[in-house]
Image 1 (cartoon, one colour):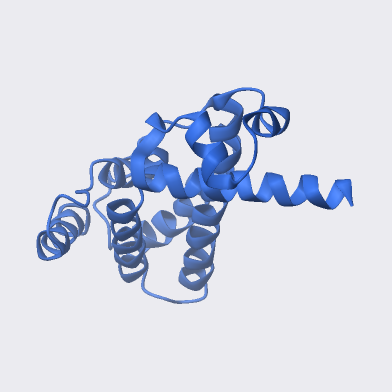
Image 2 (image 1 turned 45 degrees about the horizontal axis):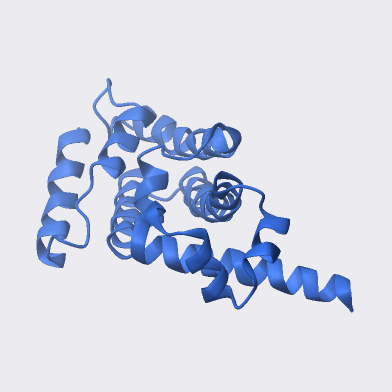
Length: 179
């Protein structure tokens, strides 16, 4: 039973961390996370000795799910889907998520620790698949790279910008990279 409690506590801690990061960004405190998760602060520290460890674990889950979104889009593009539509859809998804979730914006801005770099690189590798198809079709300006697309996501408007303006930003951003 103790093992099940430990697993449940860890899951509650990670879920609470993600919720609080989404709402408040990285300034959320360990005491606040423990209270939100319904565990003692000591339990939180037993699972995650430092705040960096906790944020890394929560960001790893988030980053993994974002990488999966890009991989699915890359698979569709390699199967014949329009790469510009795929990029536009991904950009719309990431902008929408970042407007609702400060942790997504932090991930896009590269605030993740070194322990997440490998996961991020997998994401860039998946995005590169889309960029390669788009270049082969002449749909992107020749000098556009995955780093350029990452820069667009990192500088995307947040929740302070109305939805209509975010949509306009996406249209302008895509016009700037497509041929």
